[in-house]
Image (cartoon, rainbow, N blue to C red; front, side, top):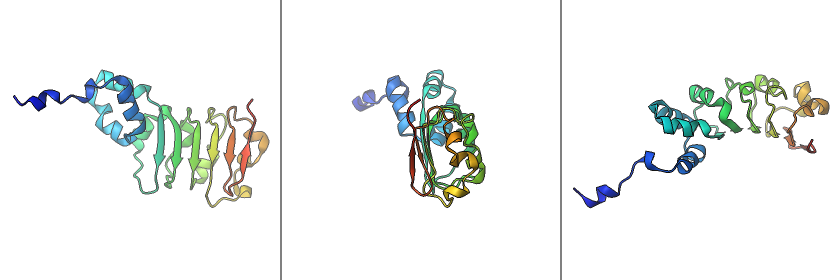
Length: 166
């Protein structure tokens, strides 16, 4: 037996904290779903289920609906550069940070305090909507105040609206 083989470990031998860090920060959601979740490994699935995901979908990336839908309750941050018409924002109930560069009208309409109750940062910039073209609930300060945790709203023209803590 080669001495070097005894030094090789297994992924499952890593501490939970390191695996969680890998899942949250280094492995794309689609890869996590296809490569790990479907293994049906109790410890790995427990770690995956405890993760909070900070998703960045660049303009050239492929949006994988099944993995996204499976982990939707664990997504706390979404930076969407791609134009994803199918992405239903109203299911992201634990979302705290949202940045969309090219929002579809359906997505704009789904940004409501009752659908995204934990939202603290919202950015729709840069996109082709002017403030006047936004849905009424996104240009009306009274409607925006219904977001309990919203602190910053970046409008399509780059204007920043700050809200005091409640």
